[in-house]
Amino acid sequence: MKAMPGIGAKCVGRINDILKIAATTEGLWLAAPPASEVKKNLKVGQLEALYEATYLRIFATFESFIEDALAHYMAGYKTSLYKPVPVANVSLHPTVTSARIALYNGRRFLLWHDMARDVARAQAHLVGSPVETTIAANLATLEAYAAVRHHIAHDSADSKSQFEAASLAITGSTHGGRPGKMLRSEDISDPLNTPKWIRLVVDDLARTVVGICP
View: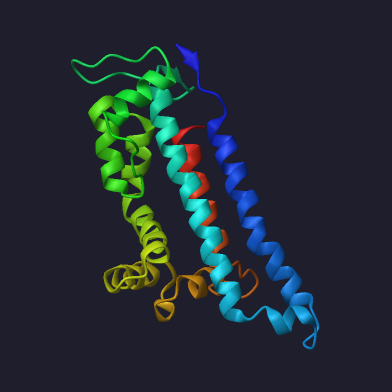
């Protein structure tokens, strides 16, 4: 079997790089004088929209990683914690490309934002893979993060209801049904340490990535 390449570390680096877009813009906005062009032309609503776009890109990167990790395990790539074992009547694949073809099963693409479905996909090909076990162990939290993504992407009455429930579970507030407001707001549970919620969510996604591919 082949050693798993550093796709987990690469994903973590990528999502942190994307997060810098919002963090850098926020820093410039906070440092700008009240009468500056920055404050005149960049309003709170626009900052919230930037946070939403940033989160959408981060979650898309996370989704792509899940597919990539599963395809690598299906192709026999191992880590120090997991040696791939195929389910009954299924064999490991000689390449990541052939594993991905089997995963797609004739479809042009797959969506990975449904965490419970991701667990089922992993179970259909491998026994006890980290894709299955790590996502399943954190399913409720990851589904809440996916609901934030879903409302940004679709902005429907149904997605708003799901987002508000998710936001309440994550932060203790619905934030008026606004994902950008939620992501930009701070966790004030510790007065001496008040990170923005987008930072906390990204750190949690990064831990999930490392759990799947150490």
